[in-house]
Amino acid sequence: MFITLEGMEGAGKSTLLQGLHKRFQAAGHAVALTREPGGSHIGGALRSILLSPQSSLANETELLLFLADRAQHVAEVIRPALADGKVVLCDRFADSTMVYQGCGRGFDPDLLYTLNDVAVAGLWPDTTLILDLPPEEGLRRAVQRNKTLCKTDDEGRFEAETLTFHTRIREGFLTLAAQHPHRCVVLDAQQSPQRLLDAAWACVCSRMAAKRC
Ligand code: TYD
Image (cartoon, rainbow, N blue to C red; front, side):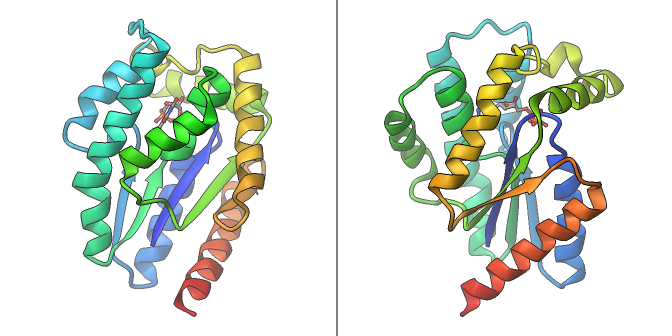
C-alpha cells in the first residue's frame, strides 16, 4: 500500500508520519518511511538545491528538479519497497508538484499531470492524506520549526513566499482533493496531534480493508 501525506508547510506531516509508522509496525506491517524532495541517494543533493534560500532557480528549473527527484525516488526506493510487500509512507509526492508548481508558480495542470506521470512511471498513491489548516497558522508553525532546528538558512526557500502564495497552496490542495475523492482525504490539521493520528489511522485502516475486498 502506497500512502502519501500532503499539505502546506507546518501542517504536521512529519509528526503524523512518525505516528502512523509506529501504528503500522505495531500492527505487524513492514514500513518504508520516505519523503520528497530528497528520498533517494542523489535526492539529498537535489533537496539542498531546491530548498536553499541561496538558490536562485528559474521556475522551469525548479519544476524539472522536483520531477527528477521523484523519478529517481520511485525507481530506487518506492517501487522496490512495494515489491517487497512494504507499506510505503511518503511525506509529499506528485500532488505537491500539482499544487506548488501549478497553483503556486502558474504551470498548466495538464502539463504537470503529464510530466508527473512520466516521473512516477504509472505509480500513483493508493491513498493521499491532505492536512489542511489556515496558511497563517501553517507558516507560523513552519517558521518556528525552522528556527528551532536551525534550518532557516538552508531550507527556508518556500517559507519565504508570501501569504498570498500559501493561500493559493491551501486552495490548490482542497481543489485537488475534490477532484480525486477516491484517493484523497482532507484532515483538519488544527486538531491535537493525537486526534489527527487517530483520524488518519481510521482512514488508512478502512482504505486497506476496502483494498483487500
Ligand atoms: P519540506 O521541508 O520537505 O516540507 P515541509 O516544509 O512541508 O515540512 O519542504 C519541501 C518544500 O518543497 C515545501 O515547501 C513544498 C515544496 N515542494 C514543491 O514545491 N514541489 C514538490 O513537488 C515537492 C515535493 C515539494
